Image 1 (tube, rainbow, N blue to C red):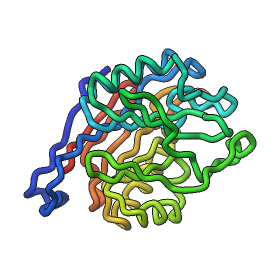
Image 2: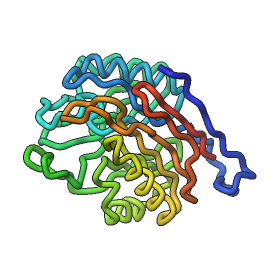
Image 3: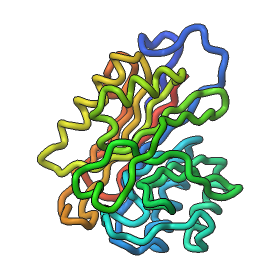
Image 4: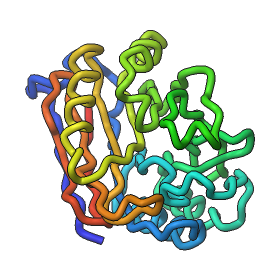
Amino acid sequence: MRTPYEVILREDHPAARVDDTRSPLRLAVAQPPCVPLEVAENARAHADAVRAARARVVVFPELSLTGYEVEAPVVPIDDARLAPLVEACAEMGTLALAGAPVAGDHIATLAVTGDGVTVAYRKMWLGDAEARRFRPGDAPTVLEVDGWRVGLAICKDTGVAAHAARTAALGIDVYVAGVLESARDAAVTDERAQRIATTHRVWVAMASFAGSTGGGYTEAAGRSAVWSPQGDVLAQAGTEPGDLTRARIS
């Protein structure tokens, strides 16, 4: 895994809050190598990323624990294969937001901490192939982390203006998403992130698969990134599996 780099926004930075007394939030976006359908191996790669990131919140791509395999079996929240990731989160004090299919036939974001695993969010807007297997979630979700309100999204959600609007209406500071785009469509993620950031004046973090992910994606885009409320890219990973980047917002 490559050494992550970090952007720190100080009080005199134009994108920084000047009246905020909360502790800074260290946020990372990771694109670990993925072996399709191998949850145990992928969970270990997630754990490695958590340790490398040294962040309070680490965001992973859509279906990151199984690869983009729409027929993958569901991953129970008490699945023993997730233990290495739980242990890494306990060690680092991290909330990991990982992707997996879950009971009820949903594409979900799992919230992983040292205390265990919960289903935090269910994808609301499905692609055509996904809709043949999965059901959409019915509501946006916000997590509170150390006083920061973090809205959750998964891939196609980010392209639906109503999703960002409904999530922002709940009162958020950061909009985070696990996504998957092919390398030829890498600009899609940037365009969506900038639109959400500038429309709703929130930080945006998107973790994108890199390399091969299963499901016919042999070259995913990578370039996971964090954007300011002004739409500026603050930190961005490369195109290789194993890359990650982080930003400390304050």
